[in-house]
Amino acid sequence: MISSLLKEGFEVWRRNLRLGIPFLISTTIVFASLFVFALLLVLYIQPDIVDILASGKSVREAKELVDKLLRKVDTIVTVALAYIAFASAVDSFFRAVGIRYCDDALSGEAKLTIALSHGRRRWIHFYAANALFLAAIIVPIYPIYWTLRSLPLSSEAEVLTAVIYVLVYFLVWLLYVSVLMLIYTYVPYAIVLDSLSVIPAFKVAFRVLRRRFATTIVL
Image 1 (cartoon, one colour):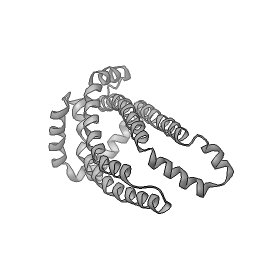
Image 2: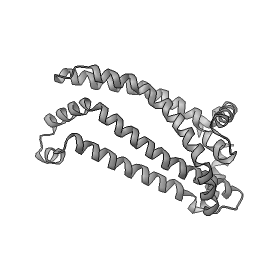
Image 3: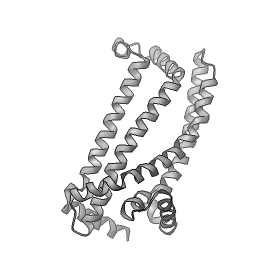
């Protein structure tokens, strides 16, 4: 079943090479904006970062940069949330277009203009589902956020302790996110193809996941 599904999918893509355009545009914008947001954030926190890297004093200055980053948690969180909101909006629209475009290709009638029109109509529902999904991911970050704000960072040992604490918490959070991503797998398709609103889409997607759990894991 899986092999035939992959083979059919490849054949559809081979006959319609433009199917990847919406996803390519989305990926390009999201990663380009990530670079811009990250660069502006680093330059704001450490304006002379270029001179530091050029000087070769990387070890000592890296510790100072980490210390400054930990002391600017509020700014980092604000910029991160702004980036997530922007990237989610871009991803929601182009993924909605891409899903409809690919579905039309399976019936042999793929037209980008139709996919774009449908994507504009379903975009807001997709964005709302993404917002709910991202909120479930972001909320567990707040305990580590408030913990970092309360930690003393007056010595290298304290900074190192904070970094280790963050890494451990990150690994646990990553496992949690993996489970959420599995649950969210079919939500976009329910919203775009079945024209469902957010909550019904989650319900339908969860029922599909229970029936196709093994296949979903493999794919």
